[in-house]
Image 1 (cartoon, rainbow, N blue to C red):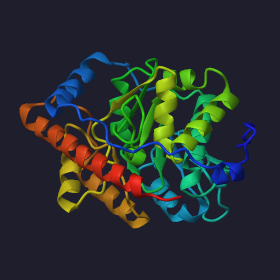
Image 2: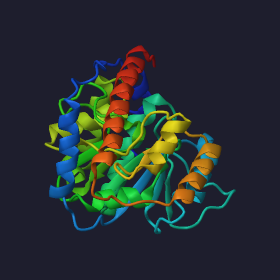
Image 3: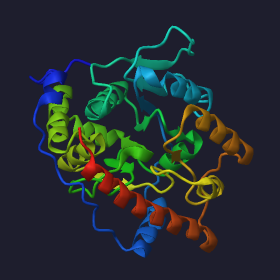
Image 4: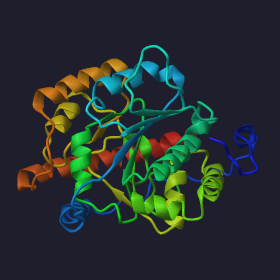
Length: 315
């Protein structure tokens, strides 16, 4: 992508950063969060998910993980549903047509994360996507469950769905490890002044927040009146064997994404999920609400640990 913002990527890396604090947000009472999650399912009906674009931000060194994703969770996506930002289509091994590859000028490092995010979002806007799901090459996405969840929401509502809590953002913070999902209306607002101005704004916010792409996205979203909401079922944290089994078998929230996976672990998880079958959202019962409470407990622990990690992170 060509950055017409008066700052080259090299300048971006070398410029002094005005780092924002990564204090965890003040947590809402958990029973209130569970209630909000329950009520949201009934009032945000979208009547169909439309075009859901999955975007993996990566680097050429992660080719094995991209291959694993394409062979597993992304295998049943329709042509045009998957884009890969950060590398050209490899000559070997060959990949199926229908995947969009874009080698960006963004650095293949922490400093390039925000750049790859706004490159992906701008590409999704150009393609007319109803929803775009930002992922990394170490994520596993349960596409059917994601699209079932999005079908109960409206892409005409300006919203970012993810894991709230990371970084200094008035919308409540955003942790990108479990994925970030943007509605069409959110893209329209964030890019309302055009691609160039959007990239300039995202770049400026990235400077202020230590180049954390998720926090930059949160800040841009808030500036344009876009809501940032939790989406239970996204897992940005590492799960031990028992937690992974519980998450895969959960009926509410359904498993949507998993994080911190090697290529071999992606394939192993795919076999486990295939064994149990991909599920759709169902009406929650008292017993399944325990799983939702557990998700929020794990989310709170993750936000605290991630915030501490980011405070000690050095570029």
